[in-house]
Each structure stands twice: as structure tokens, then as C-alpha cells.
Length: 232
Image (cartoon, rainbow, N blue to C red; front, side):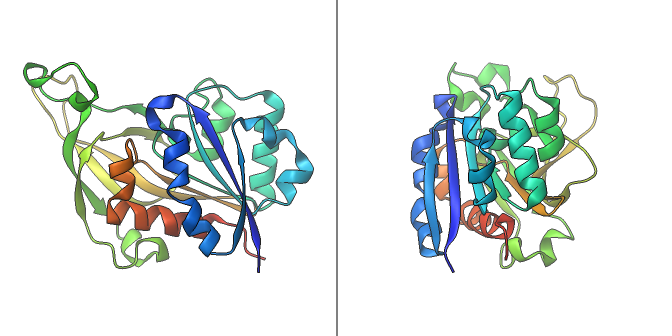
């Protein structure tokens, strides 16, 4: 059975939205998806097209979304269209829209940096070695089957979130003498969310192409997209 996937990509170029989404096109095609690609979230306002879309893969960091497009996105997901993405392309999109945050359930807040005495002034200042730890739910969830705890050296997302998300993996931000917080903070790394008849999948790793190619990360994202896609 052929299904329709819509890739929406753009926003901040530092997350390589074109190259990052291109990594997953062959996988989706092999899974039987016809793929369309758009460079703007304005497509979400097209109700007829959204009704025919089984999966949205969004990679739009920051940027803005119109009232009509956001209404269309929320309506589509509520009606059964899946929404999936990674890193800032879904967890740091449309910062001015609380209704978007309400849909996704988690929002990037920061990625703590290294000791100021060790920084060099480029993006590597925010690359920290950190553990990704599966939750009890994650150890039984189809997305995470065969995946165990693992370590990444990349941005460690601090996420503000609500209790309606189902967290499959977490990471812990430690207390450091150069940071203002006073106890370790646990943030979700992989989560799902059911919204009406639709499903939302989010993975926070994915700042760079090498992270997306890491076997655990790639497996989680591939399975997450399939989980989120509409089933008929």
C-alpha cells in the first residue's frame, strides 16, 4: 500500500534541513511512501493536501508559521496525519507560537556549553558527552526495540515539556560550578504524543549529519517516522 509523506524543510540553515532530510528519503521510499517536499510550512494550510498526507516530516528550525498554516497542521494531526522530526527541526520551531508547542509537547530551551575555560568560540563549545538512557516505557516500545543506553558527543538539549508526552529516553544535565542550576535536570530525548487520531514523534539528537548517521539515532528516527505515520 502506497502512503504519502510530506517533508517540510527550511528555517535556520545551521541544521542542514535539506541534507538532513535527504538522508531519510531512501528509507521512506523503501517503506512504500510517495514523497513530496516543500520549503515552507504554508502547505499546512491546504486542507485537501493535508487530508491526503499520512506522514509529515518537519525540519524547520525557528522561523515563523502563519495562523492558517498552524491551524491546518493541528487539524491534520488531530484527524490522523502523523508528525515526526528531530532536533531543532521540530523541537525548536515557531518559537512565537504557543499553539505549536501545545501540539508537540516539548520545546528546546538551551544546550549547555562546556566549561568557559575550554571554549574556542565555535559550535563545538556546545558538544558534550552525554548518556541517552531508555525509560521503562522505552524498553518495551516498538521504536526502541534492540536499542540500549548509548552515549553521544553533540548538543545536549534541555527541553521544557508537559506530562502528556510518553518519554522513551532521557538525558541528565549535571550540576557544574559554572552553571546556575543546583541539581541535576532530566530532559526527554525521545518522546511520542497521541493527539486526536494522530501521532507525534520527536527525537532531540540531530544537530549535524554525523549524529543523524549514528546507528542508534538513525534507527530511532526511522522507526519513529513509521510509528507516527497514519495507519489505515
